[in-house]
Length: 174
Image (tube, rainbow, N blue to C red; front, side, top):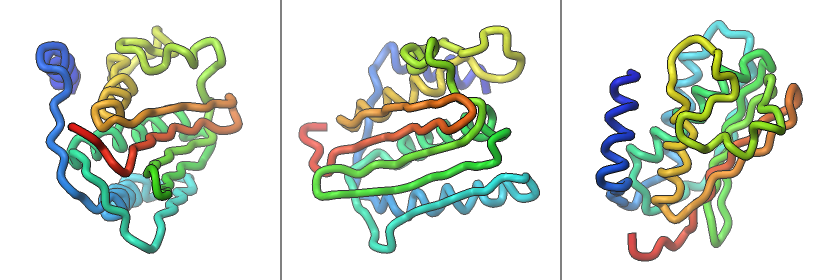
């Protein structure tokens, strides 16, 4: 897994992040991912809150890349926010944009680390053991920006941490 992450970094540095957008049902993508995480979280003492509008939302995206971004956010929320016993994913849309929000109520990100959280190789706790190079959120940011979108994060430690990917409805010249 670490080798795959290093190869991803190498490819992005060499080529930039190339995306291949197609019209895709974002609602269905989020439903599919949520269903998989229900199985992953089975048996955990965790409230998994999923909010997806009844009507389907279509957007021109690179679906595999967007799926990767969402999985990175969900995996981080589970890994670092599980103590809060809450994981939420929400899809919203208006006439100008579509947003996917991932929220947890765990330990959060201390204010002194929030400005750097999307930088490559940045880890809140550099002494932390386990997988990861500190590139997951940098990849999410790259994917959002390649879609002419953005990612933002708000965290109040031990209350809630929210990541929001916002994508424009009308993407020009991808």
